[in-house]
Length: 201
Image (cartoon, rainbow, N blue to C red):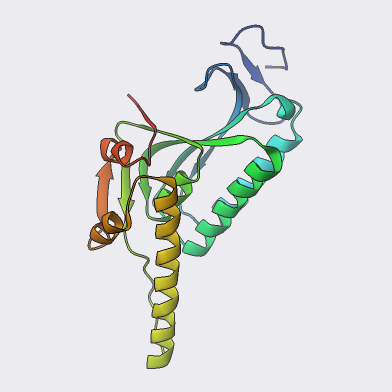
């Protein structure tokens, strides 16, 4: 389908070079672009975010967009790639002034929870499951090296917890209690704690 001009809030403007541009979905009176990110939090996901943001900024309709909607599901992955994606999302928002929204589905686990939390508006479907747990790492070496690595992991855990606390209603006490196990929680719990703003049925 070729390019066309929106004539009502229910129109969809499609581009031949990138995705679909929607009006009134899911925000009243807004034009938005959307893309999908699934899979492990790794280098490939980092590349997906950078490429998608770049293509959106190069599109003809970019000046008219108010929201970027990301359909997201992930089993988790590496902390370093998670922080790279958080920085990419924040840089895009700072440089463009556009809002980035996430729509979660399936499982959103571990590092995926923090990426999801970077959205300005956060939605999920009723069957979405979330997982929070402590940072984990397998490490062999001398005793001093193991202690140094443990300190680094503790610093990373504190940094990630502060990020989640800042963007949700979770407290440090909540996260400390949750970290005792692999803590799974449903969409209703996520909404109650401010991780999700609205649940779609």
